[in-house]
Image 1 (cartoon, rainbow, N blue to C red):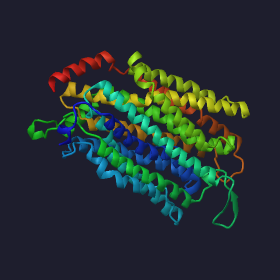
Image 2 (cartoon, rainbow, N blue to C red; image 1 turned 135 degrees about the vertical axis):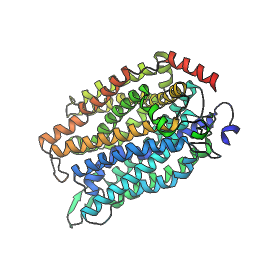
Image 3 (cartoon, one colour; image 1 turned 180 degrees about the horizontal axis):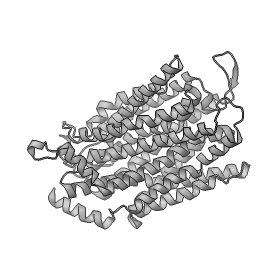
Image 4 (cartoon, one colour; image 1 turned 90 degrees about the horizontal axis):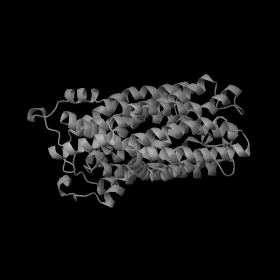
Amino acid sequence: MDIITAPAKPTLKEKIGYGFGDMSSSMFWKIFSYYLPIFYSDVFGLKPQHAAFLLLITKLYDAISDPVMGIIADRTRSRWGKYRPYLLWVALPFSLIGLLSFYTPDASYGLKHVYAYVMYILMMTVYTAINVPYGAMLGVVTPDSREKSVFSSYRMFFAYIGSFIAMGIFGVFEKLISGTVRVMPDGSERVVRGVGDAAPGQWTLVVGIVSLCCFVLFLLCFLMTRERVGTEHKAVSEGGSSIAEDLKALGRNRPWWLLLGAGIGILLFNSIRGGAAAYYFSNILGTSVFLTCAVYLFIGEVAQMVGVLFTVPLSERIGKKATFISVLLTVSVLSVAIFFLPETPAGFWGLLVLQVLICIAFGVQSPLLWSMFADVADYSEEKNGSASTGLIFSSSSMAQKFGGALGAFLLMQILAIFAYDKDAAVQAPQTLAAIRGLMSYIPAIGALLGALCLLFYPLTESRMASIREKLSARR
C-alpha cells in the first residue's frame, strides 16, 4: 500500500498535490456561492423564493449524505489507502455534473424546476463523495500538528488560486458580454449589463472550461499525494467500533460541535456577502470600466491568498483559537462599514479597500478551520480509541454546504421579501436598501456567531501537545 511506501516526512510535491485538490473544489464552490443565485433567478428563470427553497431543502439531504460518506470512507480499504482513492473515482462525475448544473433546458417552468432540484442534489452528492475523503486526508498525511497546519495552508493557498482562476474566467466573460445587445426569446433586444443578462448557452460554455480544469486537478491531487498515518478502522468482529458507537462518540464530542457552529457562521458570512455582490454591482454601483463584479471578487481572492501566508506565524504566536476569533471580529467590523459608504468615487474606492482588508483577514482563518478539525480527530482518537477521521471531517463539508445554502436561502428570501424584480430598470428604494444590508451588516451576524462558538472551544495548544504525546505512545 502507498501508506507503507510513502517517505517518512511529507515532501513539497505532496503539499502542492494536496493543494490541487481544493484548487479544483474551490473553482466550482466559488461559482456556486457567487453566481448560482443570480444564474437561477436571472438566467435559468426560477422565481427567487423557489430558488431559495431549492437551496435550503437540498441541505436536508446533505445533512445525511455528509456523515454517511464519512462513515463509508473510514471503512474503505484499498491499495491507495482509505480516502485518497475517491479523488480518482469521483473526479469525472464531479466535473460533468457541475457542468450540467449550469445548463438551462428548453422546457416548461415546472420541468425546469424539477431539473434544478435533480442536478443540485446530484452535484452536492458528488461534492460530498470527493470532498469528505479529501478533507479527511489531512488527518493521515502526517501525524504532526504543525505539519497539518502547513498542509492546510497549502490547501487554502491553492484554493484561492482556484478561486482566482474561476473569478478571472468570469471576469473575462463579463467584460466580453457587457454592453453588447442580446436578442431575447420574444424578439426584443436588451443591452447586457452583466452576467445576469448573458444567454444560457454562454453560461454553459464558460462553466465547461471550469469543469475541465477541475477534472485535471483532482487527478493530479491523486497522483501526487500519499497517506502515511495508519488509522485502520477495524470491523466490529475484530474489536472495532460500530457505526452507532462512532455516531454516539461524535455526539459527545464538544469541540466538534463548537467548530461545526463556527464553520456554519463563517459560511453564512461568505455566502451572503459573496452572493449579494452581483446584485450590488448590477443595481447600485453599476459596471465601471475598471471595477466589474468579477474583478471585485477577483481582487478579493488575491487578498485572501496573501492572508494565508500569515496563518502559520500568527497561530504559532497567539494560538489557533485566538487567531480565529480575532479574524472573525475584524471582518465583522469591516463588513458593517460597507453599509455607510457613499455612492461617490470616494465610496467606490472605500469599497475596494474594505474588500482587500476583509479578504486578507478571511484568508488568515481559512487554513485554521481544517487544521482544527484534524485536532478534533486526534482528540476523538485519544478519548475514544478511534479517530473516525472521515466522519469528523464530513462535518466540515456539512458546515460548508449547510452554511452556504442557508446563506443563499436568506439572500434569495430577503430579495423576494423586498420585491426584487430582475426585469426592472431601477429597483425600488426598499430593495436597494436590502441589497446594501446583504453586502454589509447581515453577513457580519454570521461571523459574530462563529466567534461566539469559538470562545468556548477547549483544544488549546497545551491541550493538543498533551494529546499528541499520548497518541504517539499509543500508536
